[in-house]
Length: 124
Picture (cartoon, one colour):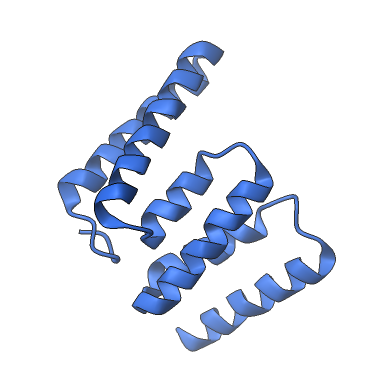
């Protein structure tokens, strides 16, 4: 089970799809890569319908979303949910993912970095 409560068999399918997406990408087959990415996004949407806006789902949806602003919104919602659930593992991952986005301005980057630094201190 994920830290936010998704049953292991359901999350194992996410891992399987992630491998398929990566393999398709390595083959430089844009059509196959796009099809596998869409399959991943569809499965994550199904999980979201079943389980709601859980941090694992929101973060992984963001990982496979092309638009940086949409990714930022999904990661931010994931952070809020992780905080609500007390899910420290996903909270850390989501903060790190946000900091990898190119769409952040200086103030946003400083804010998210300070939040991540505070989490790291909290978990020492």
